[in-house]
Image 1 (cartoon, helix red, strand yellow):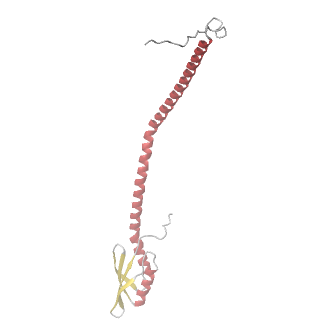
Image 2 (tube, one colour):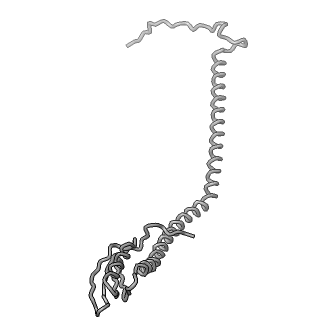
Image 3 (cartoon, one colour):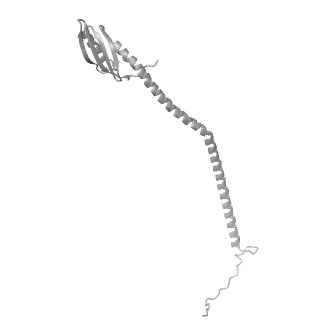
Length: 192
């Protein structure tokens, strides 16, 4: 099969005088070269600014890392001080509880001794964790009643209970009183 091209070939037009530069070259080529040169310059400038920013950020990171390395021991020391402070506060709390427990029996016996009226003598005091049993002798039942009222007025004591009272001889009454107590103070001690 034979092929025939029916489209006529067009003649190439010769470049006009307007498309040519003064020295005979194409203006388009010059424009293309100028655009490539401007693009290369813009790309180079952008590369230079980005690399300047990158080196600046690298210097900042290195400075921050150096400061962190310098502050690392100080930070660890502060954390150790915080742990030591927590431990010290725990120990102070234990000491305060021990001090309260040490002062508690003294305050307890002081309150009992202040509550003892005339004509009444204590012969035995027995304590447990929260109770106090008192045994004593009085010349009359009114002295025992006054003692119970005096004990009831003490903040650390709950209501006293008369467990037993019996007469021994003509002028002697033997009694046993039981009461609950707490070492806790209702008001903090005054520091001087």
